[in-house]
Image 1 (cartoon, rainbow, N blue to C red):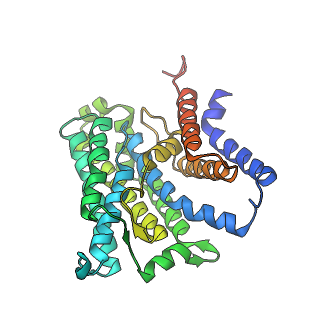
Image 2: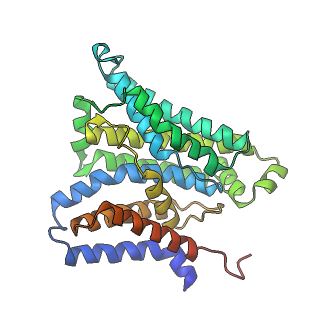
Length: 315
């Protein structure tokens, strides 16, 4: 039973939560409610995909929320007019620069973890602490409104009734699943998470793989930051990405990826992200404060880690 819960519990929990909302939450089964949920989901899913790969190596990336803020600030700085202190770049170029900023943050994390051999939680905690300050410096410490027509397409655009941002999140999930399951990079990633020392002795490019994993996490966080900026129609470093690292870790762990590494469950991670976002929406719908949602997430993390603990006969 414990094995079944470990493997499939997230799907059962999501089903129970959906049934509860259908029966007990007013106006849950409406187009407006579903559209709101779909608009909130993509950043959480995308950040969680990067977190899943990092946790698969036995590490953790606490800087994903801050990376979102940095990418948002860089995007704003690039796109606003020179008269307002920006560069007036085309939106496509601004997005590329923002994603590259996330890549650089990820590479920095990877180098500190892989080359300097600093514990991942310490290395990324440093970026968590300093990164939001960097984002505030880039924007001058204030919210920057962005009147960009392209953002309307990001917020409202649909294909066959499915929001563009959800399609982007789904495509990224497919790509990450392919990388983890079907490429040499994925095999190395899982090997490092299973036993890093053995991977070194086997001659695997451990340092290069770790740097790549953290770089991908940074890029995905930056993409999430761009989407969050488009949804907000502004760059607000004090708000964008706030506590996303908690949501991402929760989604990954609840989805069945163990914190000690060696396994990445992409579908479980996506389902976990949906579960966490739906849980927050449910609590808000029932007038529960945001602090309660965070406490519930903390309880879920503890419960998920407890369920996934090694049993006596598992080693």
